[in-house]
Image (cartoon, rainbow, N blue to C red; front, side, top):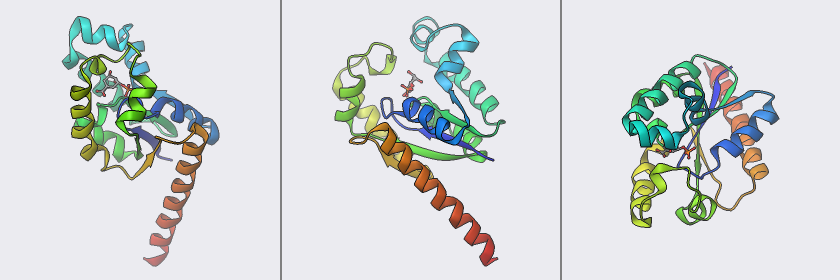
Length: 177
Ligand code: S3P
């Protein structure tokens, strides 16, 4: 059984939705930022501050390579994880990739004043630029769920419906052969 991989910008709900989704499926939940913290004994902010983003990205790729070898995981990635094509390939090879989308307004309302995301420290224009630049990458997912106006339960339900549809389609493709 393949993994389920949640991608998307910061504040789209990857970790919250991922935990609930994993509960519904009785699968394990993992969060790449949390795993990086366990390996380095540093928070994401501390790694950025002390060692820089390059070091963070290298720890992130190591975590991704390890998790991609496992099965039946719901994996919440960091917002920048899949921008590295090697990370994308590793995760997609052994998982269904689901993008959580949210409007910039919804994102800023959720996390705008929290202090734990180094890349959200700049002015709104810089965050908006990052958000816009990344949409193309996120849109390559197997499917996209807009979380802007939805509760966690609604998002999980939508994911479960889409996953069931995908499974049915796979079976009907096999039946056609
Ligand atoms: C990042 C997103 C963060 C974290 C790091 C970098 C990004 O994760 O990995 O601050 O590049 O978008 P969340 O998306 O879970 O906030």
